[in-house]
Image (cartoon, rainbow, N blue to C red; front, side, top):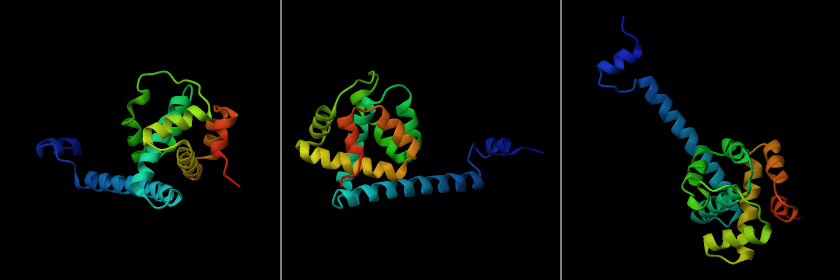
Length: 160
């Protein structure tokens, strides 16, 4: 009796109907979690989904340039898969070691990337971080905040 992989080889390597269904479910779940994240962020930035996506990519890429050790991998593990995909396209820190910088430099980097003034970069960064707080664990929030200087950590704290 042939096993499933032998059956696939005989059929030209096509995945079985069960594998197709699993892949469809995975893609559907991946898309839903991304859309939920992006929808939450878009609501915070005024409903503009394109701006929300660009802000997420810019702010998270800049944050990753600041995080030390394995913290980037820990943070990414809790992000929706399609948000992680956005970060893979971020070339600014590819192959470079993380470096320490404070709030003003963070906002300048985000502002330059999004071609926006520092006050708008701060608003967008706060929106991204607020959305992150809703989509990752408290422990991960604490771990990320623990690596940031006080002025940059303030972006993670909701405004009163």
